[in-house]
Amino acid sequence: MYQGTLHEAPAIVSRPDLAAIAEWVRPRAKVLDLGCGDGTLLGYLAETRQASGYGVEISEANVLACVRNRVNVIQSDLESGLSAFESASFDYVILSQTLQAMHHTEEIVREMLRVGREGIVSFPNFGHWRNRLQILLGNMPVSEALPYQWFDTPNIHLCTVNDFETFCAHHGVRILERRVLHMGREVTTLPNLLGSIAVFRIEQRT
Amino acid sequence: MHDPASIGAVTPQTAEFDSPLQVRSGAILDGYQLVYETYGELNAGKTNAVLVCHALSGNHHVAGHYEDNPRSTGWWDNMVGPGKPLDTNRFFVIGVNNLGGCHGSTGPSTVDPRTGKPYGPRFPVVTVEDWVESQARLADRLGIEQFAAIIGGSLGGMQALQWSLDHPERVRHVACIAAAPKLTAQNIAFNDVARQAILTDPDFYGGDFYDKGVLPRRGLRLARMLGHITYLSDDSMAEKFGRVLRSGALSFGFDVEFEIESYLRYQGDKFADHFDANTYLLMTKALDYFDPALEHGGDLSAAFRVARANYLIVAFTSDWRFSPERSQEILKALLDNELDVSYAEFKTVHGHDSFLMTDPHYHELMRAYFHSIEI
Image (cartoon, rainbow over all chains, first blue to last red; front, side, top):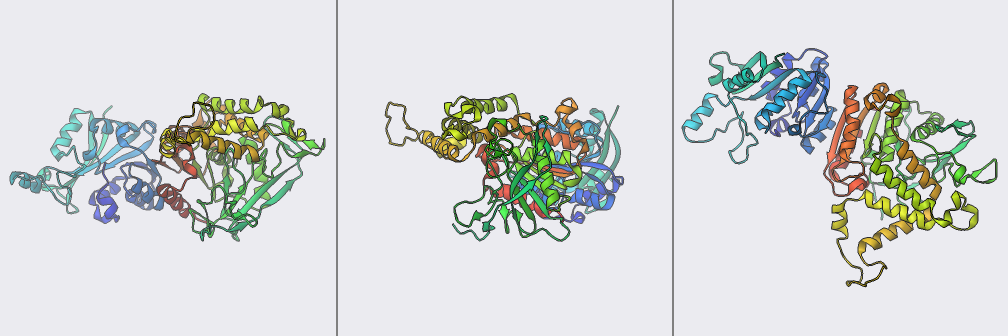
């Protein structure tokens, strides 16, 4: 489970994917934030979009931080599913920088699109040229978006922008919007090569 | 003994209520009294009141100690006091002995004014709803229209929930710790064994033992020993007592041999000396009857449709009597109603009793939650 940079850098500005996610959320939406960290995104959405909802976190420290930040938080392991939540009970279910650390990738995507009318997913793009270069030079990539060493990383299911799009095509997931970023800016040319972070807005095909 | 963060010496107060109270069973109490303690100051806007609801064997003495007995520390003194998680520098905290209790509020050991004899078994079976109603009158008396928060563990957590259902406009926050939306059959079974221990004690006299010069000590002792086993966890007992023998060798008899036996008997004896047997019966019944979903066809989410409060639900992994799964049922009902709620689950070894322990993570969360409450 993701327990990384959110805690160290609480400001929304330091997480460009969060800013991109916030732009997509409609006012007064009901949001479920899976792996919500210290609640920065939910707090920001409540303030700027009058959004309401809950965060889900496994880490005791993050649950405490959420309560301190007056963010509703449910302590739970995402790997055990979202059975506490009714189908289509949220406008958005957000999975920011958490997908790559999940064991049951297919299940969590299926669950988030059951519980939410839409899902928003952000993850580090393993296809970014610097990652490719580091592999080419013979090392596992370490970067701002992938700040871990191979031996201490929580990331077990890393993918590229292309991989995720293929995954969606094979799992009945429709991509509604995509934003690929690098250093906080949107990358439109060769995104799978030049972007370090990807954000997708998705829904279940019916 | 001196604890700078303790509220210090406290004095219980009594409130008399003359108007009749009809309880859920249909029985009517012509009047009643509630004994309570308060800690901290009620602010001018009366927006900082917090009610602490007690569990099965608890009472109004939540924090501090009595002037004449420095060892009479309140049962939740680690939670309530100046600078404590429920900070009495900020909140006006009230502890009340539930109706039917045996620590000063009207109960079976109280003299029934109509007969001049203790109520005994004639005291009506009271429910969690009845406690809420009886205590709402105390809130009226104290001029508290709305509580900033109501907090309780175990049976007290159930009462905190019930408050938010019966008087949604009077409760802004609920902290419900180690509770359940209703007891399971297994849980009721434990309660019934405890009741049977009391009811079959020859010194119980059908509940009219007060003028017989005896107490149903054996029954109460057994009831408490059984209860105590279920409040601890297998691991905590193993850690605390293991198979340690008091004398170091087997005696091949039935006297106290293992440390755990000694401990349980001590706890049982201590309890039997100061707790009323009829009250114990009533409190376990109130637990058994608690089921807010009942009048909604078993639909707990429907029961919470009227609720408006912000909730904190807390559970402990080693609590098998009120397990985290039971707290999650409460959580589900709150989520279904889109209520503000946070849920935390602490890894502890102390079983159900964890809610009374000074676990730093648990206390830090309680502190954060109370800090987040605006007054």
